[in-house]
Image 1 (cartoon, rainbow, N blue to C red):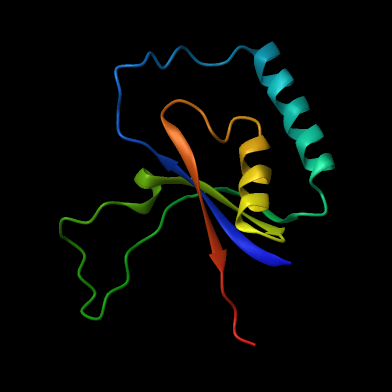
Image 2: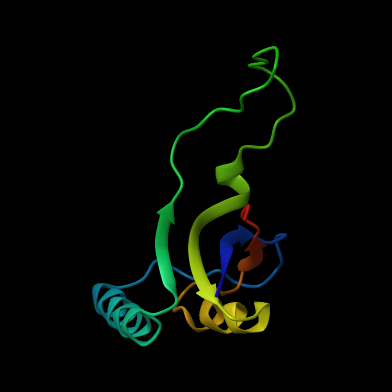
Length: 115
């Protein structure tokens, strides 16, 4: 099976309402759905990833200032899945609760490794 990098990305802002934060019961429901998703797709989950934290762009001349977009502003998190096809990897990512929602989507990219 091939490996795919799934990047949760911010999408361009729309006029769609974003809503308020989730209530404790909504969070419990989401975690239950996430646990069920993890169990269902356990054979495909290589690394369920996580949110991104602090970082810094590394360049040849160690540029510290510039018109750089911070990756964490574009990418909310990542995971790595294994699947036979890109379409199968997309199905795994699409089924993940909360990953694809208004204001964000997931980019699924095949990882090519030597050998």
